[in-house]
Image 1 (cartoon, rainbow, N blue to C red):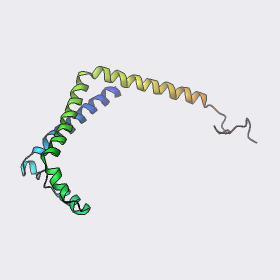
Image 2: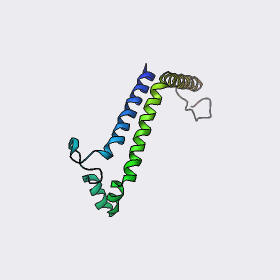
Image 3: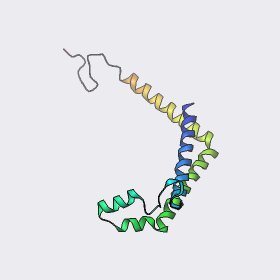
Length: 127
């Protein structure tokens, strides 16, 4: 059950990030209470603090907007891939969880020591 929920949350996260990254650089100023992509407070603050005033021009360029949109499309593609391969992803997570449980049980059984010994202690009996 937790494997299914993990995959579902991952799909939702990929959709949200993909939509935001694909659309946010192209939202006009004043829409939805947002400022322009290349003329926002945080970008101007970062440019002023670092002394790199060309940063604002670079971020506002179409090349950077296109790259950010490309990352958004990539996230949307990952979400669709996960939807189409949902059963495989769930099975892989369940198998990985079962393998880690077996390794933990094996290591816990191998580390059964008397309460007065430490794992790095070479002696059989501490007096």
